Image 1 (cartoon, each protein chain N blue to C red):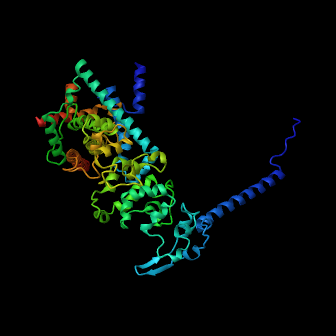
Image 2: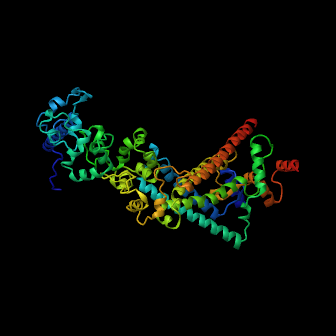
Amino acid sequence: MGLNVPEYPGPGRKRAFLLLTAVAAAVIGILVFGTARDYVQGGGYVPDEAKCLVCHSNPDLAKNTPQGKISLYVNEVVASTSAHRFIDCTTCHTTKPHEVATPLTKLSLAQKCGSCHQYQYKLHLESIHGQQLAQGNPDVATCVDCHSRKGDSHGVIRVLEHDAPTYKKNIAETCARCHDNDELMKDYGIVEKVYESYMRSFHGKALQLSGYELGSLNKATCTNCHGVHDIKSAGDPQAPVAGADNLVKTCEQCHPGAGVEFAKGFLGHREASRDNVPQAHYTEIIFRTLMISVVAFGIFLMLIAIVRFSINRWRE
Amino acid sequence: MERISTEATTASLAKPVEEKIKRFDIHQIIQHAWMMVSFILLVVTGFPLKFSEWAFSQWWVGVWGGIDAVRSVHHVSAYAIVIVCIYHLLYLGYNSLILRRPIGVKMIPSIDDFSKLLQEVSYFMGISKERPEYDRFSWKEKFDYWAIFWGMPVMGGSGFILMYPVFASKVLPGWMIPAAMIAHSDEAMLALSWIFLVHIFFNHFSPGIFPINTSIFTGKVATERYAREHPLEYRSLTGEPETEEGTEESKEQA
């Protein structure tokens, strides 16, 4: 009554609304398309001041050496999505890469990474992997073997990316690339099926059933007991898993108050057998026998009952 | 008089009135339901750990809201099933020692149960013509009952070792932890295969019972079925042969 209620939406407002929507859609579209194009094409993020990728983005680029053909291809997508995408090629590959025969090899790589990552490099040098590299053994893991994605050393990725080989959820699988290889492990006297036995254990099962959220990944994986950059051979007396005393201290990191008896319950990445925790081995035999015989009896009883009931029904 | 007869007519029109015998008291109904619920919860939250490599297990754990939720449900159900066992022991003690009901005595296995087992197996295989006649509890019911008496200490004992491994290793030798894991896993497989195959088949899916046997949930069994499944007890309850057929059969046997 007496109130002048304007018609809503009025023709003017309607036009303004449509215009705004169109502008917003255009802005969002350009942003999404532009970003997506950068990711898809892999361009835009590699500074590449020396224009290396002009030649090295060619998948066929290779050079012939007495040892055979060496690919000189750099995957632009991998390089531009790596943690080092803002670092120019020449930071690692020397300022005059064409004047050096082999600028970075498996043996020299860690030193180069160590020029920035000094603390990790220092630990790595003391580790079993680092010591073997120093002796010229190319079998063992160096930085990029664990830290880069898709087996491409240019694809170094941050530890907290969910698909990083060093993300908590993926660590066991990353170690298994070498440590689940019987051929390779035979040469180092590692006969235990470390990966399989880990996945059978409570730790492995819990981690396998966890999601990717960091909160649910508070379970022990390889590196929690064996160390990370300073990883030691299990036979090294300095190793966190060597001897009862060290092992107990390692268990106590997560199980406060764990004693020697607690650590004795660990099967040492082996199956229980007559020589390894025999009590657990005999428990297994007893319960396996009991389970199989009782279940077999039950199934037998069911089957003959089904046959009898069917015959009775048929005769009716 | 008129009123009563009307009621009877209405009842018979709606559903034929089935004469029933009370078989279980309220405590037994509660104990079975309580144990059933906690057992099922333990199974569904325990098996993903045993078959952790299955994609189904990983999906299933996600349905419950993650491994920590699954673990909590498993632990709470474990306490629940231990409590129902204690409840049963108290119930058993009170009934046997104070009320002097022969309820526990009837469960004690005897040589007779073994010969009835053999007779039932030979009946199923077509060697014997007659199915054995049971008293209050058949040998299968006794087997189910005593299986829990064996299974609960094994599952409870090994389960609590795994639930509190640090405490367990203070009072028990260390090898008990891996042994408990093996025992828990195998005994669980035994229990769930027996329950989901044999128990469900003979108690729910047998002819004359299918699809569900409600006696343990309502406490009541139809008189006709009672006479068929527990003839010895039925005769001692009524003091006479249950049917004409039954009389002939018992005469033949004699």
